[in-house]
Image (tube, rainbow, N blue to C red):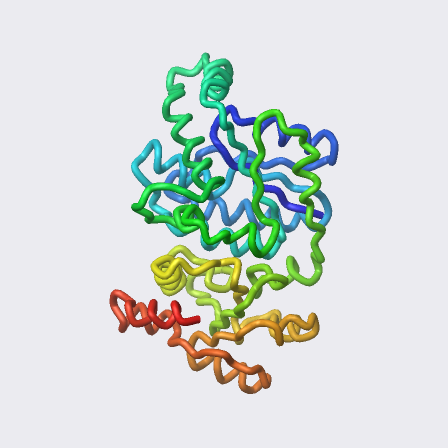
Length: 321
């Protein structure tokens, strides 16, 4: 089936839209309230795992995810402790061919009125800050914003068209729009091919590069490839942010983990259409044994993290891909 993520400021119609999708399509709705303050990344990861399993059989709607953490933290708390989590989460959403619907209002007066009407009973209601949240989402819509950019959300705002150019992963929904506008963007998924393989992230239909590492570090428990808010995965995400690498260009796997994603990609015909980047010699050796043509070899990010300090040389090589 499908997976939809709803983002946006309060009073922009997210709850109404979620309820409509549940009523008409029998969607399962998860509402991510702000909890587990010190474990947001793990919380969102757990929600994603559950959503992917359910989305094999029915429509799943996630009411808020990583964008909410980034935007609300920017407005209310001066920033998020997880500025790059969007890069990781988007790899999973791309794998699921998920649709992110950003609910916005272009009428500040209307939004303020709606907000105060629905939040009048709350002592912490702040219509001004809610308008600021909405404006930040509007910056994404118009791909324009402030110069200081510290997060993956900011990478999207810059304007390289990450989603809209390569796959239909993002749309904007204005208060009062027909909900069918959202369902027109449904993207049926070949669930057995993608969702059943934990050793693969990204949208293989659109990816220009296949980034291939060695294996998941089992010391840190279960993990998708290069999906961990720490160690070499985070270090690599930071380097990708520095060069504003477009996540929609890449799929991710490990050469020496199971299930074998290389074989699946070869059978699908997509392997030959992507430039394979080996991240480290262990990945390179396995790819050579599988007779995979390698476009580029980069040091494993663990090597870069330990020995390249700031990572400028590594960033320069990433920028050349």
